[in-house]
Image (cartoon, rainbow over all chains, first blue to last red):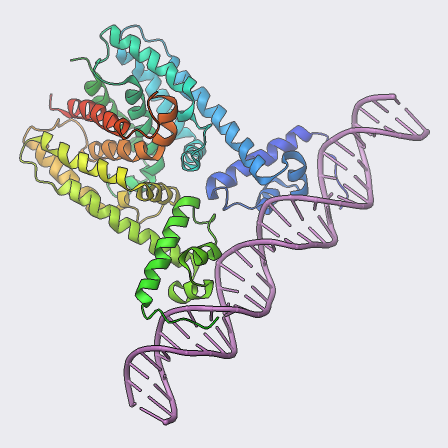
Length: 205
Length: 205
DNA sequence: AAAACTATTGACCGATCGGCCAATCAGTTT
DNA sequence: AAACTGATTGGCCGATCGGTCAATAGTTTT
């Protein structure tokens, strides 16, 4: 076959990145072959090497994209204006939770980055965490948040529960909640219970 | 070289399983080759196939072992006798937390099993969770635990925070807590804050 | 219009993959 | 003592791995 010009190399790059992300997320880095990425994206292996150089670099670009996506999400949550009233955080937390629910690929990608111990992964970014701790420190001095805990730990607890829920709910929901497996209601019920416990536990005393 | 009789096939099996566990945990299933397992365990590839049949079956045995280890741990925590006083749970929680801290391999193995969506992974075991929810339901009827939340969610929140802490603390601690990276004190400080928030949030009201 | 550039292909490379097989030898059974 | 069983080895297999390279053909630059 002759080489066909798409006249849209950027579009080709995107197609490759999409296919790579899907496969990497499903099967992991080592579990994915360049041939599979090539087949799924409809181009040849050689072209992928032309655009990205190596499998590792492709993986790096895929991770960087997912990181940007996640960073925007988390930043959005932590930036929300909450004047003295901590319960205003509820909406941002719900939004964050719903976003993770709607994007399972993102959740799996986070798990993979944690396993890699990637320095670029969200929790490792000072900027992302500092953002939230500053807000919470204000809340502490305003008396809206209990002052005897480290704000970073408060953020961590929420992030851990949200991420871990979507990482494991597939396997958790089947055994514990005896409702429908695919029930989206299960998500909301967990979020509700978490908010109850979290905000009561975090209240100044 | 002539085949050397160890006269201890069980010991050989163990050596293979240990090496396999170490490599699988470090690099994942697809990222580990049989040759590497063979080299690390000091036997030949062929012998591994003789004992375990295939790479998948070896992986299965490694997972099963880790599952048993973890199940015993979680069962131990959930079984602890707590007569009406919920705070007695603190000791079991600390023990569970310390155990995870002492066994990083186990934590990574859990992450891998979650990613696999393995049906055998602990959260999926009705027995393990039912055990805890029954206890917590007793606590609810005794008025020791708030009654407006699902006991399964209470357990989940604790497990999520403990597991996620050790999954991500390597990368989390470097950016947020400006103390020593290897500080074991960071673990205790997080556990302390978590217990404060968790038990206050979970108190009957 | 000639030259340079680049997106794209198919053929090919050595290395490594998981796995198989025959041979060897120690211990056990007959 | 002969036969059998099972632990262990090294050699080998076809398939696939990530990656390279020359060729081709549109596009842009000169």
